[in-house]
Amino acid sequence: MKFVNFEKRERIGIVRINRPDKLNALSPEVLEELKLVVNDISKDDELVSAIITGTGKAFVAGADIGYIGTLDEEGGYEMALMGQEVFSAIENSPKVFIAAVNGYALGGGCELALACDFIIASENAIFGQPEVNLGIMPGWGATQRLAKKVGMNWAKYLILTGDRIDARTAFNIGLVQKVVNHDNLMDEAINIANVIAEKGPTALRLAKESINRSFELGDFGFKYEALLFGKSVGSPEKEEGIKAFFEKRKPNFFK
Ligand code: COA
View 1 (tube, rainbow, N blue to C red):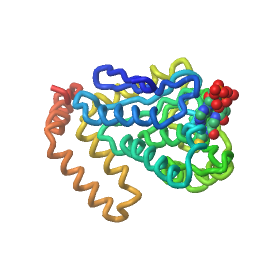
View 2 (cartoon, helix red, strand yellow; view 1 turned 30 degrees about the vertical axis):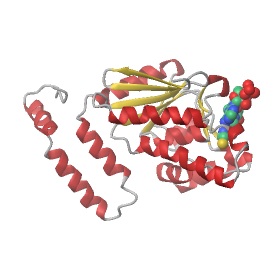
View 3 (cartoon, protein in one colour; view 1 turned 120 degrees about the vertical axis):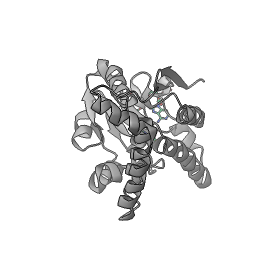
View 4 (cartoon, rainbow, N blue to C red; view 1 turned 90 degrees about the horizontal axis):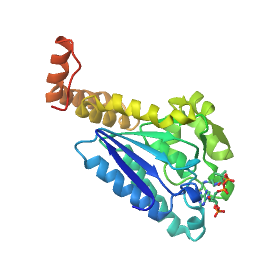
């Protein structure tokens, strides 16, 4: 692949957006490669979690502005659907996706990080939804996921002003879960991915699914949680987890 590198380290996948001369801007070609990699990760029985990061000084500086310039209304609609499909595949993947944000995460870059399950940021990271500066609005999920993740007020502030925020501010509003020294970003992200990769994959998948649906299900959300809890209790992984607890050892869910 030309624009997306993928590396497998035991139960962790590492995805690098690799178009540094354009600050990893997501052209249709980059998105297409990302889609293939995400689908491969989701189907890979050996993988439990995956990290997405960027090469160079940016995580992703947004959708490719040159490409947007060529589009009419219908093209814009198609482009929105194309990105949304990839980002929803990340959000709905049975694997846990961590965004390791190494620099600019603007526009589609911020939306890509939002589609991940949570975000670890370098102290150099910058977040923002600057689309309004270009006379357009976000189209790859920010109007939906930002409000859910950081609340309506911050979503409106970021999307309507186009302002950029640093990693600390992103942490303070709950967009980022951990800010780390720039040089340690990948080590920290890999450590967290490894912690997750030791858990039972069925429990992770079911818990992620239940959380993902928490905003849409209303009261039925509790029933849905109970159904998925039942599935986790009925899984062979529970046998091992509880046996290991009483034998005072670490569980091994991968025998
Ligand atoms: N789409 C296409 N190309 C982009 C891009 C994007 N979203 N973001 C950056 N690039 C390109 C620049 O055009 C430049 O290309 P060039 O060297 O051929 O001129 C190259 O990447 C480096 O960017 P540059 O602007 O020179 O870097 P900088 O350090 O001065 O500024 C940013 C960095 C991120 C502040 C600036 O690039 C920027 O504002 N990018 C657009 C962010 C945005 O609006 N994203 C939402 C898009 S919908």
